[in-house]
Image (cartoon, rainbow, N blue to C red; front, side):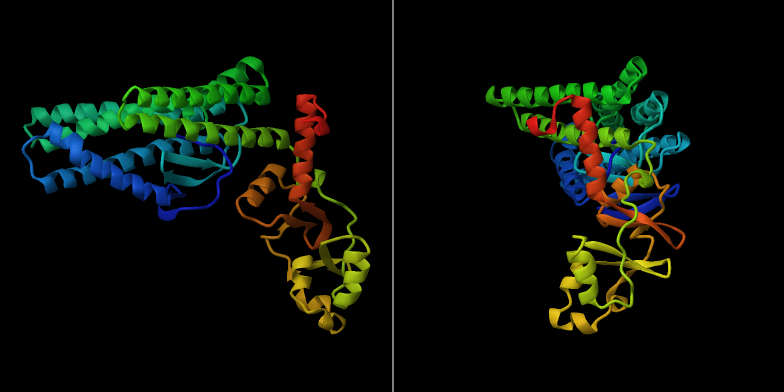
Length: 388
């Protein structure tokens, strides 16, 4: 499973592979325990009758670890091919429903989109065939029965992983492959995204309906999984489509196109009272760059001011409280706006100084980006914003 989107940096850092962080979401540990329990209680007792209870548990643990490795290889294939096609990858996270390669930008062509999406199922299919061949060799070599049984399970699991991911629904790889095909046919990534999103929603709600019908007909707990997966796909598909549309709208646009120029600045020698009266109250500015003799020093904002008692405003200067410029709060004007939005949604500040060297160029905020995205959506739909 691959999701190219804006992903918060969550999860336990497990290991680095090829310069990529492999993270484990807390939900993965729940899934790992459930997999071990299910395999040791049902699958392996049926496949290998006559073993002891703890034998089944240890075989289940090995199977879970093999599944873990298969998921990592699936996502690693996505990440490495994405790199080859000029897409930055933040890392890989394993979570409740599989894994995600955290792509920091959208592929530039439908061909790149197809290659990045298709390599995951191809890897899983290759693993399925390899495990099946290894199981056959293990039987021919007369190895103990648990060895081919374990390899049979991993072959089946990878085959299911490949086929499931080929469903044409976001965030599955099949949804990305569908989008790549529509993009190639229509020549418009935005339109391809919207059509793919509609198909994704139809498939998700189809799974939910199928699950409920199965449940009402006396189906097993598997029906609940269909419902849960359907709701997951419906929710994440909408989020993925929205993220792609934002990236398409911001593609090729730099921070300089959204920033506010000629902003009012504060002098570090001013008292807080003078600065508050002149700038924050006088110009209704809550985020104020601090500049001294043309050199950008940092900023003050309403949060900092609220932390100082009013009775001390007359004897406290801006120089005493301002936040200095850092890479975390300052961006260059030629930074891609999509990268800035990604930083904000990943937990970064909502307001940034824009500077070239030590010279202030302007200020850019999340509101600036969202205003543009709202206008782009209004123009795309052709419906006035106040009527929607």
